[in-house]
Amino acid sequence: MSKSQPNINIIQPTPPRASPFRLLYRGALSLPDSHLLLDGLTFSARLDTTSPGHKLLDNPLALALESMRGRPSLRWIGLTKLSDIYTDETGGITMDVHPSATLSRIYFENTFCLDPSSSSQSGIKVALGDSDGPETTHMVIFARPQGIELQLVVARITPAPLPTAPRLPRPDDPTPRRPPLRFDRSASLGGGTMFAKKRSASTLANLGSGVRLGVESSGSFKVPEMPIARSAKGKEREIIPIEEDVFGEGAVVENKGKRKRTEDWEVESQMEKANKTIIKQSALHAMGIPKTHPEYKDVYGAVYRGVGFAMRAEMKKSAVDLKQVERLVKLHWSMYAPVDARPSKGQSKP
Image: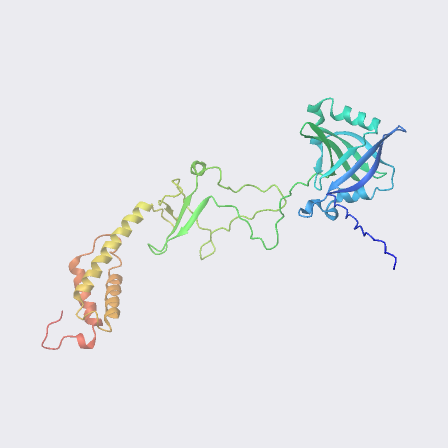
């Protein structure tokens, strides 16, 4: 009979539970001019893989605290106001005090628990290094209410943000120019007469505060002036401005020996327009060919321009004589009429 073999029970080890916190540094704070240490301090960071700020490699303060491992203490600098510094709280780093560290518990309770109103406005500044150079990381420990208790939070002290300086002009930027005190515009009516109008101070005030006026530049970058208007002979043209509404239509023409008002020009333009209408109607009435004729437009244009040129001296001064217009229209028609539209010897002329 064979001996019975012993039963072997294989016990699977329990896997360790993943902790959401990571121990960064465990040690104390060294007070200046004292051999006592505020010991029993533990700094930990909350790990969160979904948030970039809670990753260890993305947290400068967490890496700096881990680099302090092996050092017995960190340097205590003093109390500071939170309103006087800029902090970075990314990473969720907190500090815990061991229950047996009596001196440390008394110090932090006296700092943050005696006057809750002022304790939330100040913190304890700590240096991670032996010097206070620019490469040394500084942090601040302050209290934050969490229910009926206070939580000690650690944040990295960051330098103040630099003021945003105005952008300097670049070579490809357009050259700025001061807006002129007058606006020049050219019109095709009346033979291309130049108009000008002046922008007065009262009308500019009505436009609001958003209007940008030409002011002297205080910096080294000088704004060039607008080019001076010159005539074909190289002489400066004198502009006679008048004050009126910025968006009005009235203006004053250039001074070329005589000063003419806009009202006079409007009367002349209306008179010339009416005389041209009379010539146009007379030319259409005297046309002896249909509109479908291949030379209709050419003959009509020649008659219309020829009569207008013949009466150019009277077009702007007074109303033209209707009989004289009809006589000139018939004369030009007889000159420009096509061969197939001219009357034969036995027919009368149109």
